[in-house]
Image (cartoon, rainbow over the protein chains, first blue to last red):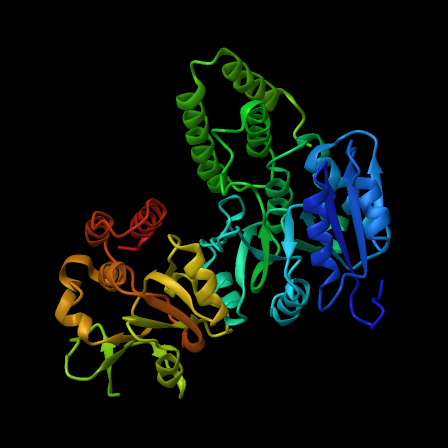
Length: 293
Length: 177
């Protein structure tokens, strides 16, 4: 598909659930882009408030895709990416509703992809929290071991990535052609790491330093010890990731160490709570039993 | 701003503001030192050139290790076409001479071919250093391999990651005798 000005077309995909104030600010940010997206899809994960009305009334240029059942972030991005791909867009730009782009976020992403000597399938923005620090939940994971590829990227002013989160990451449609879609059954967490790691295991992806967004979470937390029942998804999805093919053997070893540390931290914080132990147990059980894909 | 060029292995003389240390098999195109000097900022201890093979492909075995500890600093540096590094082989590096007074010289007797990497790791733990891909040098010959005993001493130097230790010891074990 070709954009109105003859350039490659970009479809922005925003996944939302019951956060109209956040969504409004996100869509305001998309409306203010110096280089606007050619189409904006808002995937509403079965919101029970006035989110659908907000989109229809205040942002009629955005297309609302309303899901009858909340599919979590994974389900929302799966559906939005499938729709954007079906519509023929060249680039698929994903973000949560609490992601606030600045006016040149998209233009900088496209410029970064353009100047890369090695054609990337993914480019990503740097993600900041409210106080300007890099958001701990969206820290980029550079491909440090690939010294040659890393150097080539630096020559182009780009940081070679091993994976990215769904907070202002942009993929070529070819990524879906070749690697499929994110896995719906992850529901929340790790779906982005699994999918982008799958894509970037043998392909190029870069962080574009000039492109930035704000991820407006209440706290700059890493979500592990205070996740409550949602820790289930961390425990389960990390095991699914480790059983899958997105990571190399060495990466599995490193991720496995991180995973074990997170389980220990969770148990230290909540190990005396029977319900919390049950959450962990169910996550481990399903992570070993559920299908990887 | 004075620059003295020296070939490694060899003595590293003090006197000039900077030393340009190159390997004896390194082909250094004109303008390399200027490119490194142009990328230097106040306080930088070391600027390393990108090392490629005869076909122009980067040589991973002759490139510095990136500094993983500070992602924000890495992003800021990459925007300026530089990468913060944790160590560097002496293929083509511009070295601020003042660090010799502070850190001494590489101990080739103890660490063999690993001496530059061990020494620069100590220097770069205290001062910033960067890979500058705008400066490109060519090395076609395989890098000199260290023996097992020098590799084991380097592995115990406290400057290598676990992965670097494993790879270097593996390479030393595979080295033809």
